[in-house]
Image 1 (cartoon, rainbow, N blue to C red):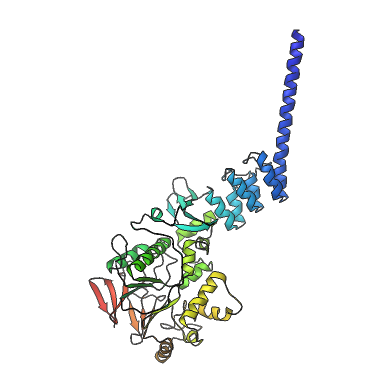
Image 2: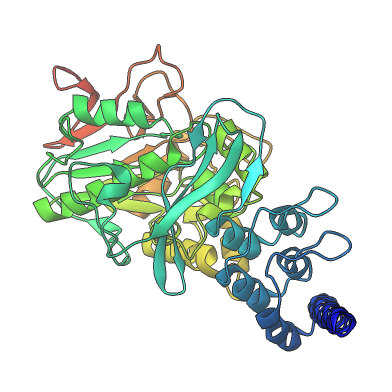
Length: 464
């Protein structure tokens, strides 16, 4: 009886080991099969096999299903694996994560998806910084996020969530309500009896922008619009150099809404540095943005892509406007540009079409002129000669202004220590280099047909 009992126990143990081995073999078969399916790019079969395996399991090379599906750029499979709660930061035997491979592929869609799901990149800097707020449209919803580097953990990552509504007040910490709004095409020919305040190139110097607007009675200490029915004009170049580009844009975005509610207006024009970012020319971006872009793999221009709130907003803007008999433009209007007989609206529409879709067969020649050295973004012919043009003569300028039907042209682009007029006060340059803290902030006030250089409400100097 005892012997029989031992035999039964042995049989049970052997059978149990056999069943366990069979189960392990079956699991290994399924594990091997999902990797085979991914290698073969058989997404349908891989999705089916995903039901039966540990989503974080590794093959002999240390690849997880997520890592391998990223390498193969299988988008639906990546989504399914992430939805099943995969550990996005697992490394393979070479020490690489899924994010490393997405970066290697320069695949912005996968990079963004991985960052949204918690991917982190190691970066050995012991101080913290962030990108400022960005909002992208993802699956017909608004996804708000910051790219951040944490100096304690020495990791760079995305922090974000979907907006519940159109309010971003909580994200920016402003005292006033800020809402995402639909963008229309702004007017470019305006008649008004109200005062106009114009500012030059900001280049990410948010604090100096705020100081200028506060000192001159455009906003209050809470950064709310107090200029009533007045008009604020920015002649472009918010991008590059400084480290608070995004903050500057959101301030103008907010003021645009507040001004409209008060019966006034904010007119943000595009400058050559806006064009540069949209064309992925990143030579002058601030080091902070360059680091975040390089470490995450999400290039800076992608932060402001078409399908983003700030990107859409900026691409709707004008390049030139006329308020009464004053023309506002970033660089200037050359004789060659004005001789094309394109009207202000034509140029604005042309640039919008280009920024939202590139060249089209019937506008390429015009685009190259408008966007080139003799176009409204890059031209410096009011102040100097170049290899491509001579400095404009007084008579040449008079012909330009007659054709445009204006008496004054206000420009930025070319730096000046103080707002100054040229050509018998026909040209006014308002680009003050805000990076130089020794030079006080200034704005141009136009009121009752007089032009004033304004340092603050108590220090105002008439220009003409």
